[in-house]
Length: 301
Length: 274
Image 1: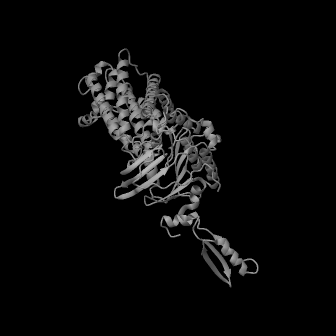
Image 2: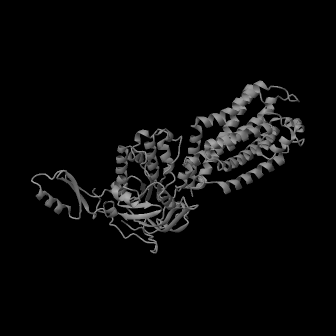
Image 3: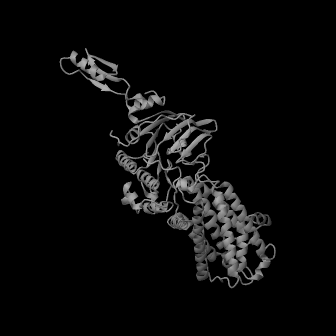
């Protein structure tokens, strides 16, 4: 995975006592949200820098949507402080909303209007919107411009949701499980759309439960489980993955053997010296993102 | 990356242009939906045609029941275009995420309601025009004359306003469009039966008249009867007169109550998601 050179380096993860970072796109301290006795978000601290793509990764019910919808101003928090583009989302003025693009998990609703009409209407709520036809092209819906919203397939409708989210030229874009229901090709297309928006400087907070999506798109990934951030890291080092011992496995005397090693190259060289030709069934593996993810959210791998 | 100060001066589009957008969106949403067009626009016309053909008797003073029914069906048409239409369409938009999505944009909240008012006005004017045209052409209805048009206008406007506000308020009680329809359609039907739409109000048992008089439809129908019927028939009314002052008072009170209910109950997302 190549990453643009402007990608930010990992900053220290904030803790509850730190001051809010008002220059960050999103700054959260000690966020708590309860539904009755159920604690959906349980003391969450996070800073998302401007220009960054941040992925919140976690199983269903982990608190992803609750956290995102508090940042969007839809839900009230029970404790903690939140600043989004420097403002408290609970105050949610129109000028603040004019800088946001929101793609809800539930979508933008059914409509008798065509895709183009819907985008034109949405664009009219902003003072400097993108051209609706350009946005249709960006999400690959040009051919559906004159098709009514409710006549679209699930994947097309999701792309329309994204189009509605970006037509206002947002500084900060929220994407709550944007690719659920996409086929693999549509997901690849969506990923390239997100990358082109990154080039335009759009900050994005993305929730997903697809590991490959987080790994492909995000500058940093936060793994959330039981309402808490388990870890925040660049995808390649999540869970100490880049320094975790490699597992070398091979077959010797008809028995499958394996060894953990921090220096797999040296280990394989030694191993090669013991065999006259190829080392039988040689494999070197690092823990996959899925391995560390499942360990982090407490599922047996 | 430029670290822009916390609050760049973000511009917003002029209100009038957003209002125009919402008006046009609401008109398209209504007229492109076959169910709403048939249910709201065509159903009253069918009732007028059927009742006009079947119940063509003289109710006294040389006045046909169709002439009497004209006032009732116009009132019922206004009820459908406002209360039923608003309750069902807003409940639908709340449950399918349209409202939540709009609430996340910088659209001024007032624009949503302006759009709905434009829709109700357009549909109401259209239904009244169609009913009058069918009444005159098919059944030789006598059109109101002179100052009756003025009464017609204010009764329709006050009735429509109160029922629109009530419809918006009632939409919050329903889980989705279908449950709103299941809730509001039977209520509207019962009100029509006891408010002097399908029968002469004087034939409705007194206790039902009393129930009906708590709701706007009875007063709308009564006000419209003063428009469509000769003054001699005012003696058949419960009070022996058209009671236009009371019509205005009750409808205005329902506007206030409806507005208070809207302010207290309106939600941009489903219950329990905040």
